[in-house]
Image 1 (cartoon, rainbow, N blue to C red):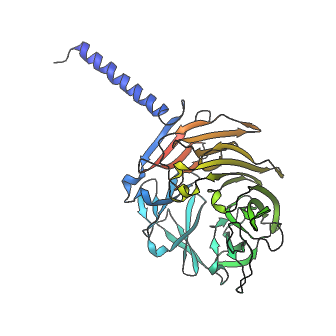
Image 2: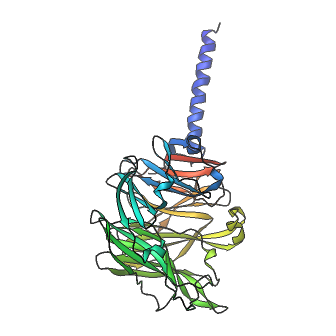
Image 3: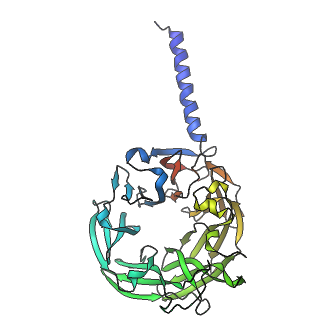
Length: 408
């Protein structure tokens, strides 16, 4: 029989344990003051081999509900994690083409044979429409699909196309190979492709360049890619990272800038590019792998050395390209107030954050620890209430978290 004194002691211990647990949740992975709102191990709810994950994409609806799409090395189906369940995206849908959120609905598109097919996720992957691809687009490498911000049922398909003539016109690509791949843009209205044309960003004639990251804004499509630089080494051009902003109203590039080049040949020195926009302003981060690129290719990024650079094009003016950190997998995001957040993975498997307000950078802040050092990347998004949604790999598990950052 337990005495009142014993019960009181147990109550004190229980209360103390609860407070310690709460404090631990608050301080364990994020900095002091950050709050864990939700955490879920996604790999427990679906049969997926996390070691084979190659790409993670997160869509947030206007009601701040996350939809997470995962792809793997093997030929198995894509997996889509929704707020309530997990589903294997049927193989018969085809190859994932791109996705977006419109009218609070997540729309995913897939390329099947010569068509791009649109599916409404919340309505049980109901088929919305199908667009037949032109003969020229069949041989293109696509960069996704972008909805027009001004006009309903109008979309853009950015792509890059190898335009080297069959007789072998030799134009050295930035990596030293034979290539002449330029960015193209197809306009889609309802279920028809209206026009398909090359995007001329203003570089030299007959220059080798192509798009590697494309996003849409208000009346703008922002291209980020590579071209032959101003330097040459061993008879081959050194790659130049460039930015081009295309006006959907004027039908031409109205913003253009050369961002970065180094005296080294090969695109394999560049890691994944990240770009975000607000109206006509763009914010860009990218890594430059200094050495041990082979360890990157072998999915052992912990042995590589990599610098992270930042660039912005705001109010029709370009900033200097500046190094802001050392690490991998950088991502740039904006909150509802337009505050710039840079996230990256450091050498210790920590997710680090730095913010920029005006011309002032904050100190580095470790917000998450224990992340697996792999190439699959980290999905990071802010919702309309400035809560941070994260998807990442830790100890072989795929994890989703929703956080409230201190100061937000």
